[in-house]
Structure formats: C-alpha cells, structure tokens
Length: 386
Ligand SMILES: *Cc1c(COP(=O)(O)O)cnc(C)c1O
Image (cartoon, rainbow, N blue to C red):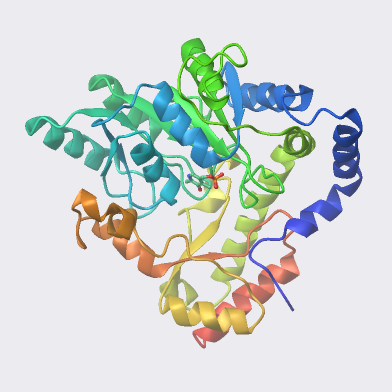
C-alpha cells in the first residue's frame, strides 16, 4: 500500500467537475486579474473569519509582510514571535525592516507560551528595546491561547498580527481564527486547509485604514492606478486561483470535520497497540472529549516519536510519506545568525525539532490507510496489538 503524506489529486478527483468549470469560466471570460472571483473569495473568507475586509495577495509570506507594513512596523522595531514556525513568520519581520524577537513555545501545543511572551516584553522594556507587535502563529491547525495573548498585548499596547496560515476555519473559545488580532494573514499554499493549486494568500482585518494600506501597498503603491503614493510591491491573488478557492470554500467545513474524524481514528488505532503510546506522543490530550471540533483543524497530524529519523526512513520504505515540520528552529538558521541567538535559548522548540513527525493527514484518508500507517509504526517499535 502507498500512503502519501498529502494527496492533492485525490481531493481534485472529488470535486473535478466544479473545478474544471470554474477554471474554464475564467479562461473564457478573459478576465484573469482583479475580477469578480477575487472579490468573492475576499468577501467569503473575511466574513467566515469574522472580519470586515479581506485583501487577496500572492502568498502567505507577502500577506505577513504587507500586514506588518500596514500596522506601521518600520526600521528598528522589534516584533515578537516563536522560533518554531515556517521561516516566513520571521523573515517578513526582517523584510519590513524590523527585528524578530523569539519566545519559546508550549510543549503540548507548539504554540507561543503566553507566560514567556510576558517575560520577554518585561525584559525588553528593562533594556529599552522598542517592541511594536506580536505575531502569534497558530500551528498545525490549533490556535494559540488568544485570550491571554490579547490581554497581554492590550496591557502593553502592542499590535497583534495573527499568522493563520495553518488554521483556516479553526476556533478558540468559539471565536474564529483571524478575529482576535488587529490584522490576520492566511495562506493558500497546497498543504493548507483551504488550498490553491499553487500560491495564494489573504489578509483580513476589520480596520478600514489597514485594509486600504494593504490594497495600495500590494498594488505597487498605486492609488489610483499609475499614481503611486508609496513604494509598494506587486502581490496579487489571481482570478484562476480565486475561482478555484471559491469552489473549495464551499467544502471547507466538511473537510475540517473529515480531518477531525481522521484524527479521531488515529487516536483509536494508536491506543490499540501495547505500549505504543510510550514511543509516540499524539496531539491533543483528551481528543475524545473535545466538543467543538474546530478547536483543532488538524492541518497537520504531528506526532513526537522516539528514534524519529529511523522511523521516518522505515515508513518511507513501506510506502508511507511523512514530513518534518520543522527540522531547525528559526533562531538557529544561518540567515538569522545576526540576531545573536544560540543553541539552548529555546529548549522546548529545540526539543520539538528533534522528535516531530507529520504523518499522512487529509480529508480523503481512509480507515484502511490509517490502519496501515499505525500498524507500520507499531511494527517499527516491534509492538503487538493489545
Ligand atoms: C505556509 C505558511 C506561511 C507562508 O505561506 P506561503 O503562502 O507559503 O508564503 C506563513 N506562516 C506559516 C505558519 C505557514 O505555515
């Protein structure tokens, strides 16, 4: 049996007619940039995320960069985020002229630890470091503790940019991802919950000034066309991808429910093997008692495993695809050496990089495929059924 980690064509098969029709109608209309499909997905996703405005952009990385410019991050400003995320979270800060300031994550959610956030802000104040904003990254499908983070942000008068790339549709305490901060960013990269067949992204906000700035900045600073107010960049969501996303948007909630079901099945299967849960560590304690299934949208199903690298090779040999998100913390990346961090600065994030493994996760995953995955993992540790 072959079980890829991600299955793009499998999803396409399930919605082929509608996707083909949507693509054809864009081609036949001749309108491929700034048309009604972009407006439609901007309206749909912003409404869904409980924000007033949506601005389509070329990818999630640009969304972060533009959002930081919109809230006024400039040369010399510090922005706090975590070192256990995709590079774009921190590189967007550097692109805007700012300095990333890292705080460690929680060991059980991989998200920003609010206590460490507060310590970091206090320490920065003590030595007069100008902190401007916070980027909480909602990782793997689950949101940060936004009640605590917003309380801290408000108390210290800091702006909040939610990096929602991995949590489209997720909720925290019943409120949607993207609806907590001043401005939020989404990605439509093929691995995400709502995915294009290529690159795409969106900024959502309820602040009309931020919306206006993002629109102008992403349109090369033009307002109106050919009259440039500021030096911006060209970052657009195109009509083809917007049309595809409009089709997929209708399935988003069903697919998120499917992801939760797949996670449920994994939990059941892992528990069927003797001592397997001493070797691997599953996401979310008490999954069976989670009432609101949007508390974790399982963009990735990430386990922590003993002998992770050998396990990954063993699974690959058995036709099972996995990925390591992320193998190296951002504070240890070559491009951020100038920030002056060293190994040991963020022990929880560093430890996670050594054990995390994303196993196959998508709505189309069948019970039989999942049984195969879990049986091979238990075989690797030479463990039998209970
Ligand atoms: C995917 C991702 C991004 C960037 O999105 P792109 O569309 O690939 O540029 C940013 N942050 C996080 C946490 C992501 O997972």
